Length: 65
Image 1: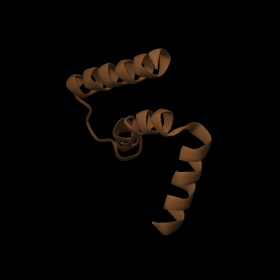
Image 2: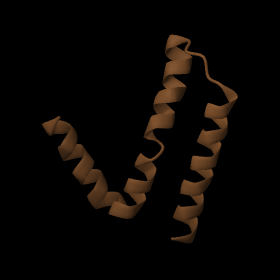
Image 3: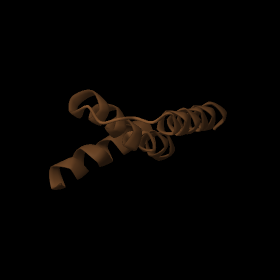
Image 4: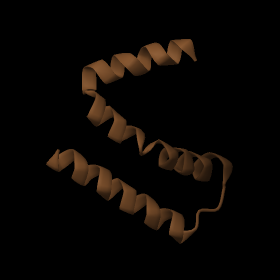
């Protein structure tokens, strides 16, 4: 975890705290995608709909910030 923090704070310094923080909001959905692809977990349409909504909110916030 200590090594991960080094890379995390370096990424914050390079990308800006607001931009990287917003990008972190997509992390759970990337986990959802990986679990569906690698483990064969079922993905309901409501999960996909909420993912699309959050991605659009993050993209809009990055565009207008």
